[in-house]
Length: 198
Image 1 (tube, rainbow, N blue to C red):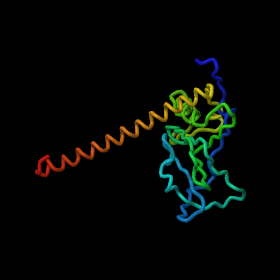
Image 2: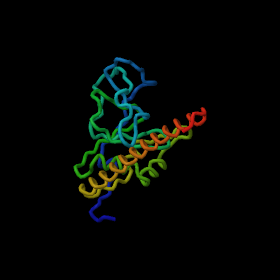
Image 3: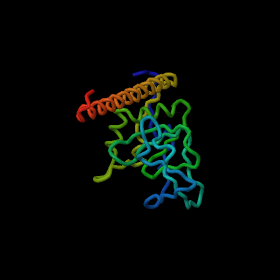
Image 4: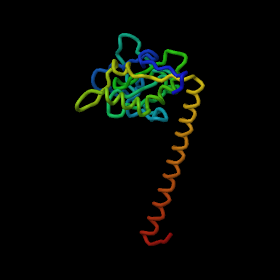
């Protein structure tokens, strides 16, 4: 292990809070002033359906905790506690209560590196082990705060994040090529099976 890497608890390097405390189902308000990030919007490569987030209106007595650029969102429910880094989220956006919002509070930890680390095998195993509930697995904030986080030098963090980003870009390209090839095969199959030849 790199001797320059320090190990800290997640609760010591980031603030941890649950998403907005909606009571019951989130009411959809098509022209509502507030947007809501839900579990289904999380993906490794960023926010899904960014332009079509659920809109609603809040009746909060105090201003809500809006998500910010470089916040790390992590699923607090389900069997796969996926983490995602937020890039320039829409204004007036909150998270559903099934998500935790992590905000890095130490200068030697990159939010992108934290998000990457939370999706690695060791962190995922810890989080799954800590999840409670027989029907619906859920993570407690106190358990999440105890997660050991490795903090290598910032330059090394940047290298790792760069490699991970390049790998994701390669995967997207390969998936696009596979999709195109499947479409080509479907066209040929349709021609052949309808008797028109290839």
